[in-house]
Image (tube, rainbow, N blue to C red):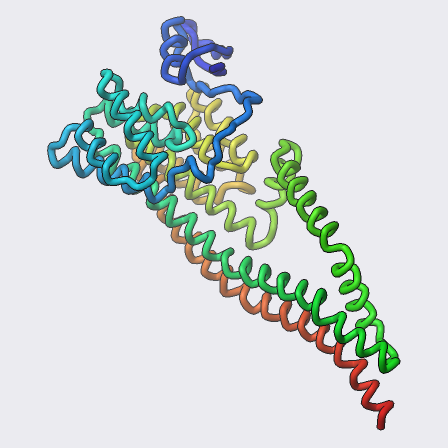
Length: 402
């Protein structure tokens, strides 16, 4: 595997380069052996075809939470790490996770550390997870480190569930309305149209629009499905492009209501991740690098790059966050500055994370409350338009009969 790195040489200069290694741990060791203190080491993305199907080769966040809590509890109870993994391997029903636990057990039996075994599965165990475990091993506090990881994952899980639950209701309603609408256009409208033609009724413009849509959908079902699939695939491919993703990231943080929610979500994640890593003993440079990997928005990643550069120059990182008030709330930078001045940065970051997690929870509830009446108005308008369009010709027919 190829890894790119940045670090400081013996003269204190920042250097960068590429190195080949079996895994990230070997890459870090090789870089240190060459006399360079690594600041960041990242695997180069290659154009390899991944034949694994994520649906069947995945571990749920809830399973990882139980893993960390159970291992931590058994270590505190006096069981060895190997024994704890054997017990967990028997308990889990996820075959893929069972294989991973078996691999971890084999790694430990060969004399390697748990963090080295976890690092072999970057799709399952994030850099944050591995770094906190490694720090716990080095400090002799692995049970406490695993417990902290479990708490961190639980908060992430709770935050994700709140966001998903806020979007679930409108998504289901819209999907049901679309399905019902298609069925009406395909089966109901043609029957009414035949009746209108037999009676020779004069059709209003709205009815003609409904009939046109019905004829188009009924006669081009296959093409419509193909076009929808192409649009979905094209949209997914476009979203993966750097230029498109950057544009979406730019717009998302500036949309009213939603933009504020995105800012607070990223503020909570940034503060929570930095607090967890620094309190676990991870150096500030590595903590910033891992936090950057946790964030998805490219503009937030840029802020973390600036923070890393500030640390390398010996400057406080709070100034970086205070300069980017369109991305991060004022409170985050101010609290970080107070934490740096008082030597209680991790505590301040933890408080900020708790505050914004609470704000996100409140706003997602408010969002659900706002979306419901908007959806009702939209559905009412659509149903009303359809009803008027279909009933108007009938009234015309009844008037002509009289």
